[in-house]
Structures are given as structure tokens and as C-alpha cells.
Length: 60
Image 1: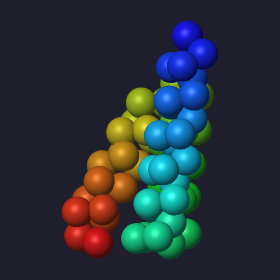
Image 2: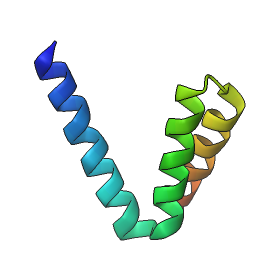
Image 3: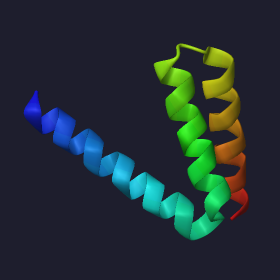
Image 4: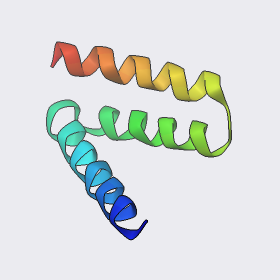
């Protein structure tokens, strides 16, 4: 269980750094929106932000 939490934390850190490097503040805001949408159980917000994030990462 602890190893899963550590791996998840490292993945989130890596994804955040990658988004900031490629997309700047917009990438970090989109990742934040995905997290907020998941926590608040708002599927529309989470899916919408994830789709926009994926499209921007493909273009970057």
C-alpha cells in the first residue's frame, strides 16, 4: 500500500514537472482542474480538462 502511494506521488510530481516544462502555467492549471474534478466527483470537469491537457501535450 505504501509503495503504491509513493509511486503515485512520484508520477504526479513527474507529470506536473513535464506539464510545466512543455505548457507552462496552463498545463499546471489543467492538471489542477483534473484533480479538483476527481476530488469533487465532477466527471465533466475532470474529463474536459484531461482532454484539453492531452490535446495540448500532443501539440507541444
